[in-house]
Image 1 (cartoon, rainbow, N blue to C red):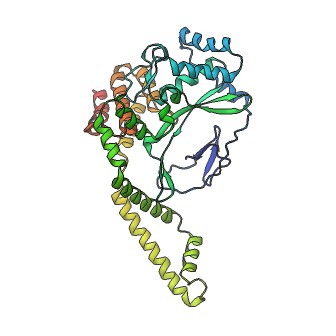
Image 2 (tube, rainbow, N blue to C red; image 1 turned 90 degrees about the horizontal axis):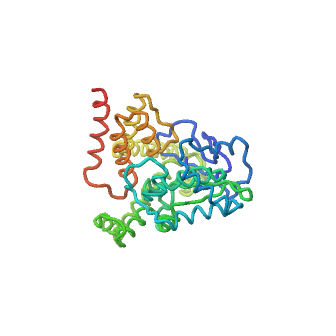
Length: 375
């Protein structure tokens, strides 16, 4: 479950997990409306266990990477100065943002040679460097940006707005948000991913002008207005459907002048409630028929189950890149196909306009994976 930083307490049916995020006690299988109260103040306390976990690093990290992190601590005693030195490194050493950076697993390769990646690469590498420098750090995955609908007065957040960043623990501030991706691609932090990629394509920094033209068309004049109307209708329907409880019925009947007219209108109220329930039932049936399961997510989960049967289960908090890397190491004979499937999943899930036919090819790769492995 998602909330703005930082939720103060859990909502019914959920817990406030360590790390300041909401975790529902049961799988969420349908739309749910909930209210969350958040505070920007995070506190500056950290337990010994949390500190130890936030300083763990793999033993396989190369001496060159360790030397880089240590160079910042030699120059600066202050933790914030170390953070700024790391951001300056990403800002000035030729790093670039790309959703298709190619296949590589080594941190040294990323930091000193390839220097191209997306938010998950930058968040993970930055957190590792901070830990090597003795600063507790963790990777946070959530959403950045969104589109404000001035017709319905709400912000629409899409899956394409998924983002990863870091939090470092500073003695004077506690857990503090740091986004290394913004040091590499400042525009990524100012608006949603679609707008960012559109601007990059328009400036010649990325390929596929056709995708940018489509994105601009969807955001233009009449198209934008029609889209806002449809989004508002959908939002209002979902809101009314999820919130049609006794209080809402009371307000509705009062506004119609029925609630105060005595028991003579009880029959009318019952009929109205029955009509509303029937409307909700038929609408839910229609929505169920019209709605389709996210095929990309379903295929990826199917792929993860296949990998799990081979002895490499995916951790619930493990991203596709990290899981693919670990699975490829455990299943070297399948490493190329595992990485290919993970890369395709990332493109299908997060790119604004995936290439035509990519979903069908992804489905074939996932379906063939288990069959080939058995042979």
